[in-house]
Length: 101
Image (cartoon, rainbow, N blue to C red; front, side):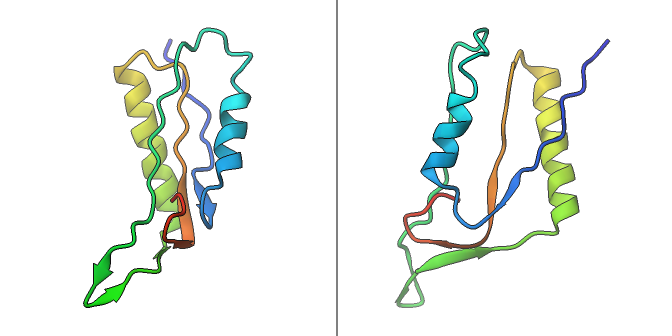
C-alpha cells in the first residue's frame, strides 16, 4: 500500500531565514535513515533592469493552487524515487537582493 506523505505548508511570508533552514536540518537528527541533505536555495540577484538596479522581488501566488501544485510535485517525486523526506519552501511578499526566496 502506497503511503501518502503529509501535506506541508510551503509558502512563507518574506525571505526564508538562514535560521529556518538550520532548524529544519537540525530537526532531522533523529531520522538516522537519512544519509544526506540536498538543498537548493534561490537568492534574489542584484540585476539591472531598464537601467535601474533591482532592489528585490515581490512574490505573489494564488495560495491554495500553489500549495496543491507543490504537494502534487512532491508526491510525484516520492512515487518515482526512493526519497525518505522532502521539504519545499518558497517566499511570498517582498524579498530583497541577497535574501533567500
